[in-house]
Image (tube, rainbow, N blue to C red; front, side):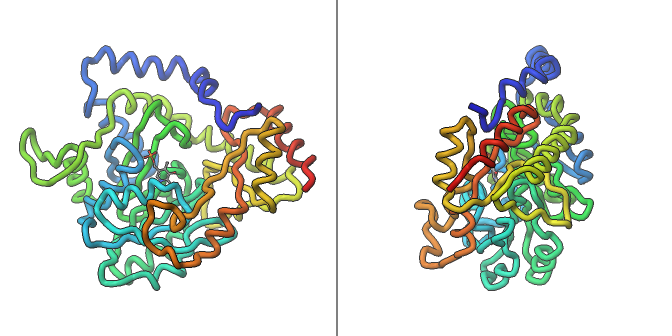
Length: 361
Ligand SMILES: *Cc1c(COP(=O)(O)O)cnc(C)c1O
């Protein structure tokens, strides 16, 4: 079986650098919010070319904290996409705000920004565009709406570390960018981890406090925050891995090109010319998807669906049940994700392509 991801191989390739980082932290005797977190925040901010970065416990809480830092919470509405990892919604709900979803473009699954304005009302405070599968949303279009209606923009970059929009890195364009370093992401820790980026000093200072129970200096609490700290071990591991991110993203791009060149009889997700995807996932569209998925899994290729159910059809999402959002429904019933990771061998890549090209409906 060709696995969907191979974390053992990934770790083996990095064993000496990550083990050094882990040992350095263990020997230091300091495990939460210390030198490693601060150094990672600086290095990650420099990599993205953004002024500030704040390390937090997960990508979900990064969204929550970014909203809190921009005074968005109870009574407020936040517009996001109907096709995303559900934690985008979790992050909004956790901040106390009401998520409002809009349909997607059928060609790429990204938020259909032309549907945003019809959802704006007096309670609307923010937009959370999701750079799905590693590809940037059309940020000019979204920022224009945000400016016109005075809305805050939080870019969900959980799948897009290193992706660009018109030569700027995702997570540097809106008011904040939120990142996840969950092990499956392009830049993954060995546990849960996340970060928030911003160019606003005021937001940065508030975030430092909000992630640490609203503490402004020791035992002084000016805000009601949460506990969402990045720990020293994960920060040190991320520091060890950050220098490889461009190399890994390049490898992913090569695999994506190979698929596009050699796969027959499938539809590809449209790649937008305004930015560079980091190919967090390689998603294709096929007719009779569930049958195709079964065929792949029976023939030695692990494939998954990201995501089988649009947000408005999830049991936990209590709103917009009567809305059609038909592009999301069609999109999520046709998509399938193929293995794509830097450690995927050429031999296995060829095998996946051959298996798919042999498929007959
Ligand atoms: C993974 C992911 C998240 C959540 O990140 P965690 O670190 O798992 O909390 C949020 N949004 C998107 C789009 C994701 O892919």
